[in-house]
Length: 175
Image (tube, rainbow, N blue to C red):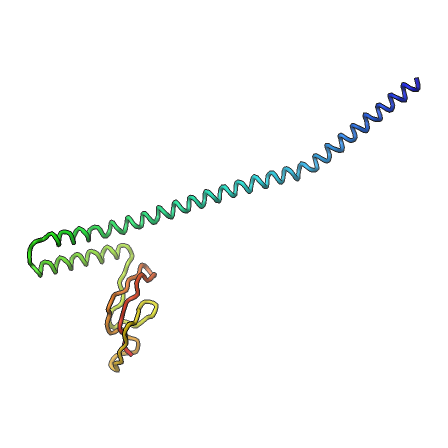
């Protein structure tokens, strides 16, 4: 009987050892699992942020293209009436110089009104003060009757949209 007890005791001891090893392995897995879980969560967040950024880039590009198309359409729409007036003037067979001059003046006024609606303004008049940010001086004259850095002649008007210069005015300055 003692052999049976000893064998049973050994079996129980072996079972205890196996159970203890299994418990240790489970504890080790539980300790490793939080790190693995955190790593998996971080990877998932990174993938989501990457996808969100890609969608943002695509959306921004689409909005930029739509904005450009809208601005172009608005600009062309404003200028079409001027083109219509020029076509009517060219199709007129009369040799009335005064009528033609009046029609060209009206077309010019219409074009300037359209440009003003778009925020475009002309600048550069004789008598204005010279500003290198807005004017391009191509000639200079010495005249004691005029103040320093005064525009005497304008060869080409300048244009700006809001505060951004589209084309500087080409001018002649004094002193």
